[in-house]
Amino acid sequence: MYVAVKGGERAIRNSHELLAEVRRGDPAVPELSLEQIKQQLKLAVDRVMTEGSLYDPDLAALALKQAAGDAVEAIFLVRAFRATLPRLGYTEPLDTSRMRLWRRVSATFKDLPGGQVLGPTYDYTQRLLDFSLLEPASKAAAPEDERAADAMPRVVDLLDGEGLVERHEPPAGDPDPLDLTREPLRFPAERSVRLQNLARADEGFLLAMGYSTQRGYAHTHPFAGEIRHGAAEVEVIPEELGFPVVIGEVALTECQMVNQFAGSKTEPPQFTRGYGLAFGHCERKSMAMALVDRALRATELGEEVESPAQMQEFVLSHSDSLEASGFVQHLKLPHYVDFQAELELVRKMRRSA
Amino acid sequence: MQTVDNAERARWMGLLARAPLTVLQAWSQSDLARRCGTYVWLRRPETGLMMLRARAGGTGAKFNVGEMTVTRCALRLEETSSVGVAYVQGRSARKCEIAALADAALQVPALREEIERDLLEPLRVRHEAEAARMQRKAQATRVDFLTVARQTAA
Image (cartoon, rainbow over all chains, first blue to last red; front, side, top):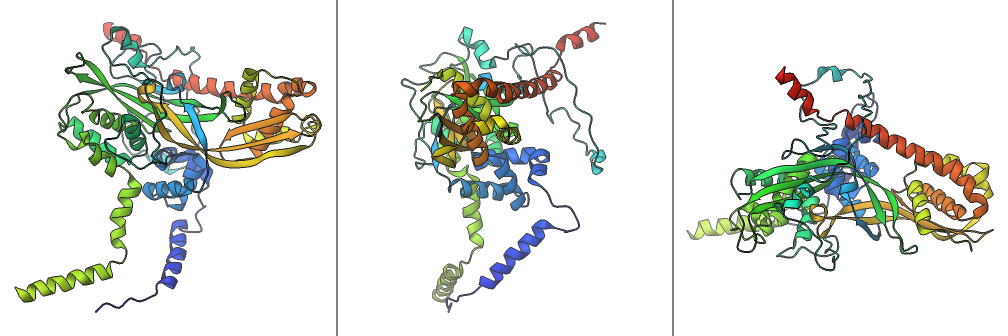
């Protein structure tokens, strides 16, 4: 028989001490500063902000340091922290057409106003380990080009004239979206709710889901219409002022997927769209998000729902790393009583067999 | 009370909100900042969250992208009763306080011109220089397809 026992307090306390020691590593090696993490592990910081659903590079860097670089653990820490802060309000919708762009590429049009601006990208690197990084060295500043940048309108807006790409306009009355930090997820979920869920969804999960649509589990024939990365101004209307003021800037990555569409009973043949938006420079995430967003519009566009990526309940219920990691990892917590009961049951079944 | 155009006020509040803390702190030690006088809190600095909104496809229905940290406060200059408000990204109470102080003082005609000159103008120049530097670097990575075409034709 199993008898409940108390204990483990000392073991847990010492485990915390050991964790701190292991996290710090060899004390002879200089300790990481938050500034180093923010500057030199920037993409990890961006991922923690995106999936932690909190734009604050300092907190994301702190979380990464505390979690010893474990992104999912750091995301958990950031989400837990945000729950301790009061909500001061909502911002005005970000205007991504007015971003200051550091990168903008389109896979659908070679020559487009503003051109293809590669920015800082791993796309054309050789993926060979760079052993010169073994030794610290000061790098020369990147080249600058004095040519004035042309305006860079959204690629999807360029085709709008012909009506070949669906338009996205605010619905009548421009209603405020439901907020998943306030309300539970309910099905069927409208697109604004799905986008909030996808925006903080685990990158690995979305990547696999997006990949599945390319391999034939949901035929969406995507093109990367445009990817833009840069900084957007954040505007709020403070209650005591009543007019919009800029309170800061956030770095964003936006992806507009353009998908071939044969048309339906109500829609003529045209290109439909999927949308991805992430904090910082999370390009893989925003592309995967756009693929999944489009796949999840199956019902709206009159497509057969056959594949996991098209199924709202499947995608939206399993996309959150906090929930997924929590439920998977809870298995390692004591289940002594549950297991004892099942053990008894199996013994009984054996005896009566 | 003096009246200030909302657009003007939004302009300087935007500059102050994006100013580095070090620049604001240096200004707060200046004679000019001291001449703003003492102030009372209407709302002490408070850090919280604002939910960032965007639009589906950039132009469609609004959706919630995620939150950001924001600090806000409000104060009143004792001498002139001018009220300053600040909403700034991040968690710095000090930055928020100095931004609100400058906002209050900028509404005082006797102080405005000097603050414009000593604080706002350098902030604007700094902000634009940084934006321009990033733009020049981005521009250097712009693909010039014409060059490629000429080389293959030769």
